[in-house]
Length: 146
Image 1 (tube, helix red, strand yellow):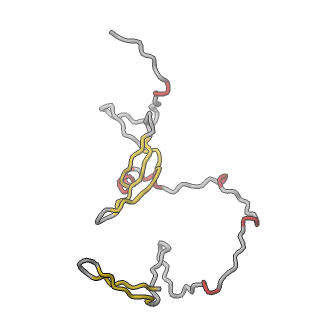
Image 2 (spheres, rainbow, N blue to C red):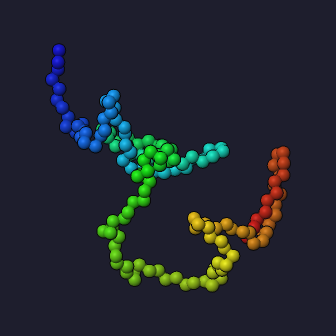
Image 3 (spheres, helix red, strand yellow):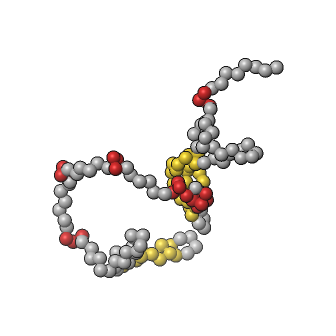
């Protein structure tokens, strides 16, 4: 015997952008990235992203591998363009803070090699202190450098 069913319009999904397969299933598509993190294991680091999935009655998010998601959904990792209306074109002098330069803090750049990713390697200038720490089974030597 059939019972009367009152439909809930909020549960209706438009199928114009859902591709239904022959076996009446469909693939979930992530809507956007919510968060990123790198988990450190003993021997390696695993990068993962928190994704918000579309086509859900309830917003569902999961942590997935960054490399896997880059291969499957590269459009999620493209840089977002900032619309022109979001950037205010006016700069006011009241936004400036007074700064007195200290010549002793100026670093000459002739000895610094800047890499392509805008990082550099610090080279110790000289040793400030030496220390030997005694543990239960061994001794560990350490130095403090400038």
